[in-house]
Structures are given as structure tokens and as C-alpha cells.
Image (cartoon, rainbow, N blue to C red; front, side, top):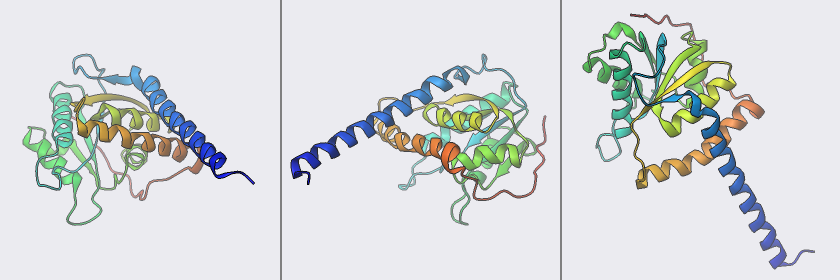
Length: 217
């Protein structure tokens, strides 16, 4: 029978090893996706379409969510620079009161992008759903993903694991802030889940549905 101290030491070792495995997976995703990520609109190659990953427009205190604001700015910049000819907006519309996708749609129209070049995906409940549905529903397989860098790294990993050819365009981030640190810690587990979803569980989107035609400029 192991003593209490021995059990405590073993638990501590397991936690330490587990934490370093989390860090390794996190950093490995950074290394593997770095060649596919751009932050200069002039340097990113042209693609037919962009996929914008959704988030809430407002925080719980009703203040603007700058993750949302900067993603919309980045998407509009791509379109107006002629780097993409259409944009698919993928977000969570799980209830009538929560609709990320329509918020993105209205924001980009206000930024001068014609509605006919904006296609909405209301079933982007999580990043995996958005990526898989981009190909399965909207026939995208060679496109640009728009989000913050930490999110792009995981999204590109998922897309490549699904056989898609993608690039990432970086939306402005919040480096060295408390909010950024919180998101980085969240990403540790999110990236483990991404690896398990594609390599172990074979996780599928919550919904598929009929094909949707994307209209290009």
C-alpha cells in the first residue's frame, strides 16, 4: 500500500507531466501553422473566399467585443484589397436571442461589402463545425481563415487535418493583456480537444444540411 506522501508525489508528477504535454501540443501547433499565417494584406496570396470565425459582438456588460470588431476589420480589409471575392460568415445562432452570424453580416455590409458576396453559416457552433462545414456545405477547400492568431493556429490545424488547403489572415489581437492571457490558457485545453477530435473521436459537426452556393465577385 502506497503511503499518503508517495501518492501525493505521484499525483504531482502526473500533473507536471500533463502540463508539459499541454505546453508541447500548444507550441507545436504554433510551429506547424506559422508558414500559413499572414498579417500583411499585401503579402497574402489571393483566394476565392474567406471564412470568418464568429464570436459575440458584445460582452456581457454590453460593451463591444474587440475580438469581433477586429475580425470584421480584417475581413473587410481582405475584400476591399481584392484578396477574396466572397466571404462566408460562420457563427453560433443556437437561440433566437444569440446570433453571431447576423451581427457579422450586418457589420460587413456597413463596411461596404455587398450582401450578395456574404454567405451566412448559422451552425458554426465551434471551430471544428465551421471548418468542416466550410467544405461540406459551402464547397470551400482552398481559402483564407480570418481570426486572431491564437485561434487561427487551431483552425488551420483542423482544416489541414481535414485535407483542406488554407491560409490564415490575422485580426488584431490583445498582446500582453489579462484578457489575452486568459485566452491563451483556454487554448491549452482547446488544442488538446482539437487533436483528440480529429485523431481519436472523429468528431462531426452538430449539423450538416443542404449545399449552399457561394456567389463570387
